[in-house]
Image: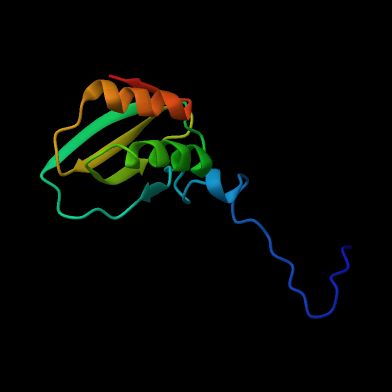
Length: 110
């Protein structure tokens, strides 16, 4: 039996994974989004290797640093190819996007 100090509440995890890697009750990966302004351009691509919210944060930080990027949406697929959607006010260079993802430590896949 675990003793809990008075005035404190014991919290339990709702899943077997940490909260940054969790899936919903049906085993579907959690989708992480950032809000974007109304953008003229949209690009969607796959990224291999992301496994948690920290991975998503690293990729998002690198992509939002690109000129013209208004928003980044990431549908994390733990153990597979995650879908990344960019909204931008200008057309984005594919090589610049791939370089940003690579700088974060991941790989753009077809």
